[in-house]
Amino acid sequence: MPEDKWRKKLSTEAHHVLRQKGTEAPYSGNLLNNTEKGMYICGACGAELFSSDSKYDSKTPGLMGWPSFGEAVNSGAVEFSEDKSHGMNRTEVTCTKCGSHLGHVFEADDSPTGQHYCINSVALNFKKSK
Ligand code: FE
Image (tube, rainbow, N blue to C red):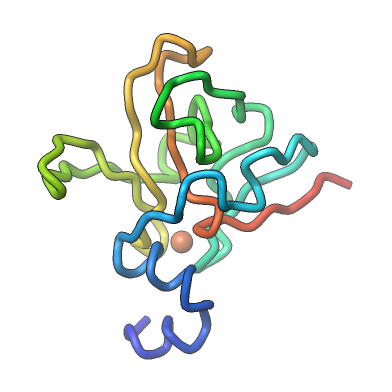
């Protein structure tokens, strides 16, 4: 989809994160403390990305302010790329279906899988299980 269409479809904040690789302020997101059962979907295209089953409460300093997941809902849901911006060496996570930026993935001892998907709330929507 052309960028001007994304701009119309998304809120200013969501557009900044999803389409311009922004990061929401820590602890600002409405899904950080969500513990309901359901599916986290892409805030841009609606693709299913993370199950609530993989959401966990991270204790990693510096990463606790964003929703944390141990794995994507399936291996094809997200894609990875090297991100050397801001003087760091990180792995960016994007939505496979629409290419929107979601957050980053780190190795983390406190994650049940050893992987810590640090994902912006504003890049996600939540679909509660029925
Ligand atoms: Fe998407």
